[in-house]
Image (cartoon, rainbow, N blue to C red; front, side):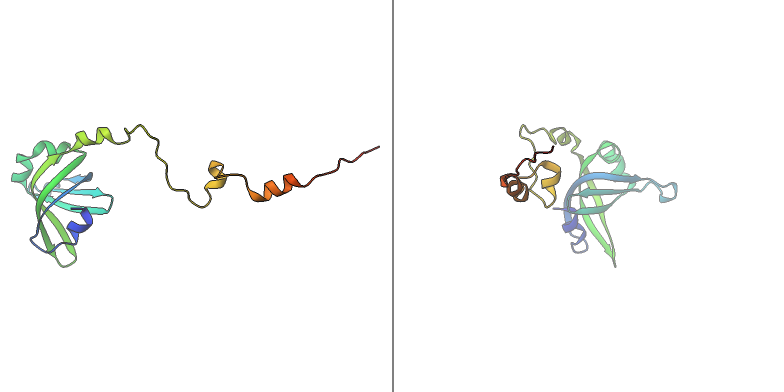
Length: 139
């Protein structure tokens, strides 16, 4: 599911979420707990990795740029965490990003005429081009 869906889920719901790793923290005062923030196109998810899980999935927790976290939601008021039970390194999937043969064609937006030359000739310019101007004979 998406990060937004996971963070909106009920307490103790078991979920799997994939996202880019934004932050990893392992404060000395946290007794080996690792705090991660992962992000997908819908938002962020706050992940808590207990020391035992962190040791078991060390490579994915400490080395992944793109990670799949499976665990359960812990909700205390407005504070929501995903408590990790497993982590899978999906970083290899990043190699295919941007690798398609066709160029990206974003949708046409207002103001693109100026930047990209637009879809055609500006009708105001075309009208002026049709108006014949007599040359002046200056003596």
